[in-house]
Image 1 (spheres, rainbow, N blue to C red):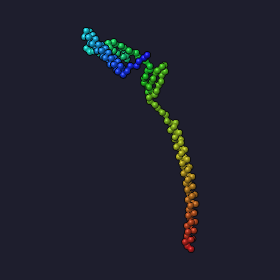
Image 2 (cartoon, rainbow, N blue to C red):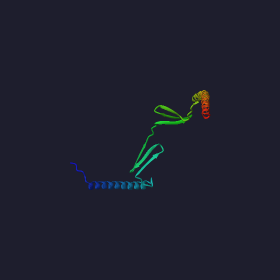
Image 3 (cartoon, rainbow, N blue to C red):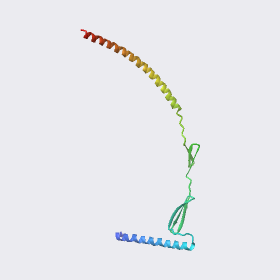
Image 4 (cartoon, helix red, strand yellow):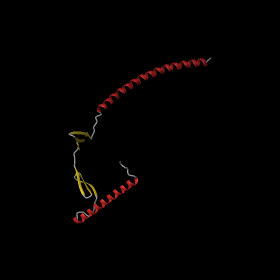
Length: 157
C-alpha cells in the first residue's frame, strides 16, 4: 500500500533537496573557479548566463555547460515605397496605401445641383406664400373694415 507522508516528513524532504542543491551549486562554483585559475580564461565564476548574440541566436551557460540555440526563419517581408506599405508573406503581397486620395468632385457636383434645385423651389415657395399673404391681407382688411363700420354704427346710436 501507498503511505502518504506527513507534514513533518515533507518538510524534511524539502529541506534535504534544498541542501542537496546548495551543495551542487557550491561544488560547481568551486570547480569553475579552479578551472578558471588553471586556464586563465575568465576572471569570474558563473553558474547561469543567458544572452542573445548578434546573429539572432541565444547562448546559455548552465552549470559549466555551454548551449547555443539559433535559427532565423523568414516569415514575412515588410517594406515601403511610392506612398504604400508592402507586406509579403506566404507567396502573397499586400499593398496598403499610406497616402489616401479621395475624389469628392462627383459628390460636390451633386450637392451643387441640389443647391440650385433648393434655391429654385425656395423662390417658388416664396412667390406662392407672398401671393397667399397678399390675398389674406385683402380679406383681413375687408373683415376689419366691416368690423369698424359695425362698431361705429353701434357707437353712433
